[in-house]
Image (cartoon, rainbow, N blue to C red; front, top):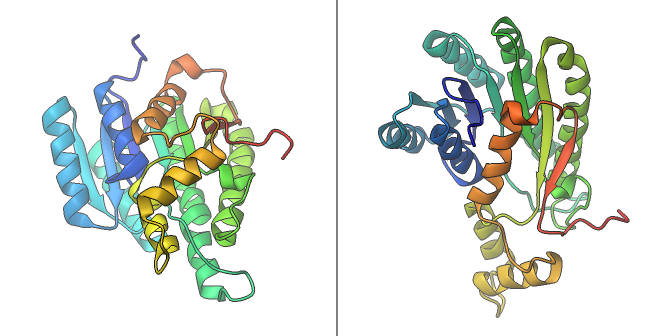
Length: 264
């Protein structure tokens, strides 16, 4: 199936690992040129160069911490200079947390707010006018099932991801007159390095191994009985980027192996 994406330009935050990297590779397979950003410069440049060589697309890797407004401004300037704008924005950068509400300081709340919410606000605000000048575009925000069905050990993550979902809905209503479609993806269990980090953290000084913890999480929570691969989630992102999803606007899609409790 031709998804009609060849020659488009996509910006992916957190694009050097996990879901972001899988989305980058899937889009490159459709002929999409890429701007990948991540905090670790050497890795994001390496991944972009590898994708360009394997898929024959233009791909650049840019170091940026999207929790910082000045880094976002620099990133947008690089995008304009290199490609003249973008057709697709994937706000993917993010990470889990671990805290108790009564113990977490303001600084931690602020960091996750900037990373999960303000990064999407700032990048959308900067790139949407460029999309409009190109005839339209797509913005996808990677939130989490935890935006609706929270895990108890990460209240800051749950709260900021829920805010991202609402931001997406508001932005969708504002931008659809300009042929810019905004949607949210709420993944469930996806076997990323972040989940492995969480497993190691939560099994430290216990008798359970990280692998056993992850297997138990999958069996206990997802009716499908396993974690998704990043590639499985990436395929859904790519479909939402394409004209094949032209009537998909302002929605939140769960890719969760049946984990969502419909009574939530």
